[in-house]
Length: 411
Image 1 (cartoon, rainbow, N blue to C red):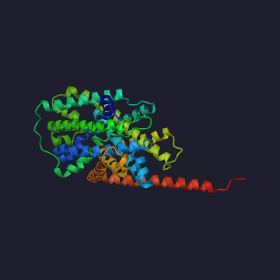
Image 2 (image 1 turned 90 degrees about the horizontal axis):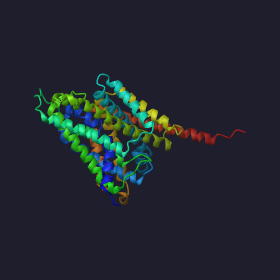
Image 3 (image 1 turned 180 degrees about the vertical axis):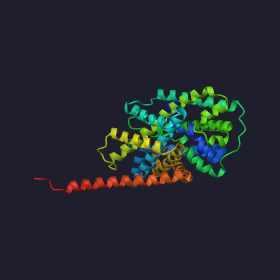
Image 4 (image 1 turned 135 degrees about the horizontal axis):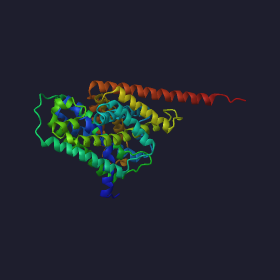
């Protein structure tokens, strides 16, 4: 099938607003605290893991266009219990990512009351989605232009003036792999184009063959430039303590006049990224109800409320750094299952080689298990509790259904 440059640009533009969120705006602070300047080479590992996972989701979305994302793919390929574990990992990662995006918004846009700003963003974005607003190609292009333009200004300002000598450097090369896992969240919105929701346009494999590498590659270049800029201007020790690295880098570079532009970009990026995160979690919950793993009487509005409440609780309970770590760890577990599922697709159903799924599986497990211990423990506990609750709910529903079938009809 042929493709046009316009289709490729459209696909990339649709994906960028889902990618450019908390990772690029806030992820460099905890990453620099762990690995210092080693966060820059770590980005290459993150991008490779994201590229392989994007290939896997694109292949499976083409093979199973009507199922609910990774949960549905794994259920079709690997079975019920692996699918329940996949759903638990995804929902945990989505709720933590929603908290990270909302906290990033609060730190940049409402620095005096970041918690209130974060909660307001969750509610407002959910209402926006419930009202039927969608990020069309035109809106996505506008968002991408605004965010990329402001990020370019931050990079230019960071390199335009010599930084104040830093009192010391933080981080160590020993945390390289763990930081690569943390910064995976700077690339994790690619499912916006590789596995679109029902009713959204599915891109042809010939388009995705180019659009996926371009999306991941462009995100990598942007993150590399922003990371190098803020590290140069603040140094790893100061950067590690910053709640809003891009804002603080501008202030340090004597460009405080540009701070309102960064706030606008953070607001726009926050709404776009959170919209995708909430929709993605809603899709997984919908898949669970359709397959009987959750009560089928749950309506779309009730599922939306569940996502909003869970995300709001994550905002309250998890600081930004913890939320980023849990989001990355849960999402990497999710992509470990998704890559494992893609690994067993028939060879003639593939667009990309089987080795990409194998590499994606290995990298996802390696990065997840190299995350900071608190994030990994929270994620493993959440994965176990979530899987157990889903399984228990399905078991109780099955028993009730069997009881109704064997109950004699009243005369």
